[in-house]
Image 1 (spheres, rainbow, N blue to C red):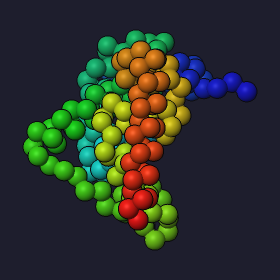
Image 2 (image 1 turned 180 degrees about the vertical axis):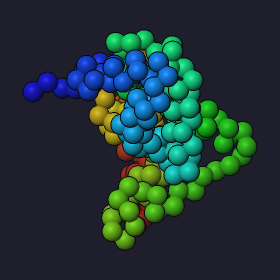
Image 3 (image 1 turned 120 degrees about the horizontal axis):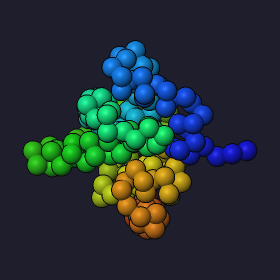
Length: 187
């Protein structure tokens, strides 16, 4: 069984043809790309910022930027990885703006995946621990563990070396363990 990578995704899904058509001002092709990738990008944005409204804003900004920069996309490359990179930059900009404005997002329990809080386990400690991580560590964790990317693919999205992703994941896991252990000790 072959593992899908961002590069193989573009070859298997026929997205190259859709991108080429969208670059030729075919709005239906871009709409199909949007419908195909929006749920994945929204999910990533939510995990990156841990805020439902923020994730919607970031995901929308991602597709606006993608539409404007479609001519710069290299055909034959992974459209999915390109979108992740745009979303990563948009999430970084969103977080920087929130910090600059002094806004701290409280994460309502109903924003957690799975619906109403009573229908799922309480993930508030994990959510708080993820929020406490620096952005570079959180994004590495989200790409590797939530999005299922290998370290090489995550490195391409984050614009850093593969060893940097490995180190960030290692540090994030160590910090999460400490944060969650401390939270458990207080309970």
